[in-house]
Amino acid sequence: MTTAMPDSSFSWTDTHAPPSVVADAADRYDIDVEAVSADRRVVRLAGEFEMESRTDVAAVLDRAIRTGSKVDVDLSAVTFLYSGAARSIIDAVDASEAFGQQMQVVGANRVACRIFGALGAEHLLRENSDRHA
Image (cartoon, rainbow, N blue to C red):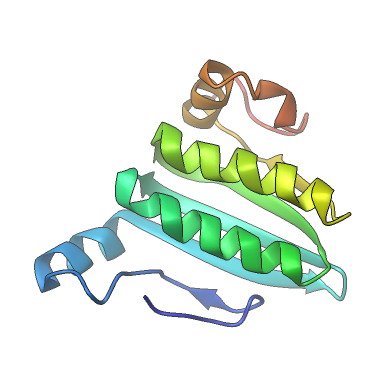
């Protein structure tokens, strides 16, 4: 897998997969991490987060938590969210509390809201989430 510093932008792909799978995965989703201030990171998810994206989401969020920064997970550009990828986000929010960090989920559109609701985790979505988009 490719790696990047927590406050850089990147697309995550698995370089051990066959070339056609890597190209398909890279076209389906992006995970961008931006340091918006010295103590805040924004992790922006965009595209289709299917089963193979789950470990990528978990790894990026784990790194973001370990920076000691407050973390916003922006789901506004997500077009599909597999329940396992959503579960990775939920687990990261729980882990952030264990580390004494603050992580919040923002910008959730209808796609994300439905999955978080089905998983019983709608309470994690901040009020600025677009629940009716």
